[in-house]
Every structure is written in structure tokens, then in C-alpha cells.
Length: 357
Image (cartoon, rainbow, N blue to C red):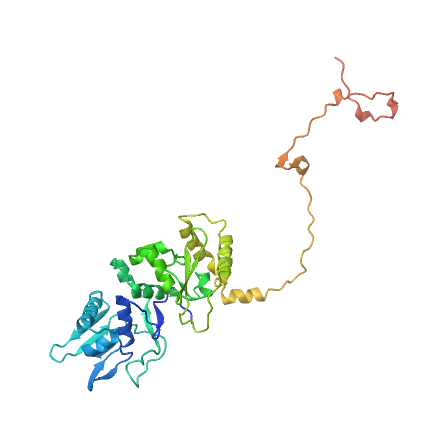
């Protein structure tokens, strides 16, 4: 299944939730335990009505979902998520009933709605639908990302077989925006509020999920998502394959006027010429016409060209082509023969006649 840049959501398997500290890790745990359909849920002998993206229970259940031991810490995490606009929750002080609702829950998803059975998904099965811009509010608020926040930020910006990114046909690729196929550790650090060395350590730690490919010069790097559910088995390309695609893009954009830095210019070339490499710019009708081309007459294999009247005035040398002017011959100054000649055998047109004054 393709995951184009224009799609508003991406898939996250429930058995691959982000690890480490951060609000996005807590959000993913809460979303994975929320109801996927409208119905009635059972918690400690109590029946609660729930809707898609909703969970109803108690503080003990919240601690279990967030993998925390302290009730106070669990409520603080829930309050932080509510302050950022990711969840809405209510807590009954008398009955201690806790209910939260995921505000970014994707309602319109592929597949038919299941109206029977359990309302909560089995832990570790299925996948979540993540809005592609779910981490944008953290970046806009200059929030200092933590480990799970950066992990989720890379995941929700993954693309697969996008026609404007030739590298995404090799494996799912992380891309930020239209001209963001190539990344740099500096730009990621500015987005996450980290230093460059911390970004490098993060990529090394999570190399089992995100593969980093460094490119020559100041082009930047490519990041492939190894575990994105592409629908078929995908192997990460080798460095030679990446350089081969990069070389073809550079050849296509050899005559393109450069604007900005090498990193910015190469990102534009990838967007402009990826369709040419992948063949995505050809419609089905154009491909059919290309396959059904028939020559109705014999091909012309010879061409006869006549030199123009000025070709005799052209001179060619190692420096190029130039034009020559022929010297005017004055017949009156032509030197005669050096030996006796029978004048009666020379045509009269060869003589110059002068009228005596």
C-alpha cells in the first residue's frame, strides 16, 4: 500500500510503539488502548459506554497503560497531554471513574467498520492511524522533544512510493515537506531542540528502525524507515544503489540554474526529476500509445544535402569556423609567361584591351 506525501495519516503497528520518555510515547500508549468503535466496555465489573478513540476506567488502569507506578505521575502525564491538546479527560472525585478521549483520532480510515465483538483492540495487534501532522504542534511551540517524540516525528513523516521522491520507491523514506527528501542533523536538531551530537546518538540507538545514509558533500543524508508496513517485504537499499539514483538526478538537473545551498538545490532536483526516473509522469494512455507506435512508411536512411553558395567562403581550423573573402584578381597586372608563346593559340578573352587616349 502506497503512503504518499499528500496522505493525511500514516500507519503505526501496535506492537511497534515508540520507546523512551516523551509525550508522544504516552499518547501512543493511550491511543493503542482506546476503543476503535462505539459500544460498551467492561472495567472491574462496571459497564461503560464508549465511542471511537475513548477509554473509560480508573486511575489504576491508567497507570497500567502508561507503565507508571505513581498515580500522581500518571495524572501529570495526562494533564500535560491535555494542555497540548492531544487528549480530553474527566475524573469523578467520588467514584474515581476516569475517562479520556483522543482528540486526534482518525475516524475516516480504509476498511469497513466492525459493529460486533470487543470495542478495545487486542494488545499488540493491528495498527494505529496517525495524523501526519501530529507532532507539528510540538515544533510550533518550540517544545523540547524527548526520545519518543523524535521517534514519532520521524515515523509520521514516512512516505512510500511517492512520485516526487525516487528514493521512496527503494524503501519507505522520511521526508519533511515537498522539498524535504534530504535531511541534515542540524535541521533535525533545530526542530527537536537538540544538539547535533545528540541527534547522531539517537540515530545510532534506533538504527534498527531508521537507517541513516550519509551523502557526499553538503547534500545531507537520507533516512529510511525499515519497519513501516508497506504491504510487502522491503529491503533497505545499499549505498551504491542510493548513489546511482543520486547520480541520475544530478545528470537530469545538470542544466538547471542553482538556487540556494547544495542541500536545498538537491532537494529541489529530487522533487522535479523523480517522476522522470520512476516513470510516474506517463499516463496509461501515453504508455499505450508508446507501445502501439507503427511506422507507416519505410524509414529514411539517407539524406542528400547540397552545400550553400557561401560554404566555399568558410574556413575551418582548430579554433572554430570563420569566413574568408576571396582576393580580387586584376588581370592587367598578371605577369606574362617567361618563355615564348604562340599568341595565335590563346583565346581572345584572356586579353585586356585598353583604349588609347
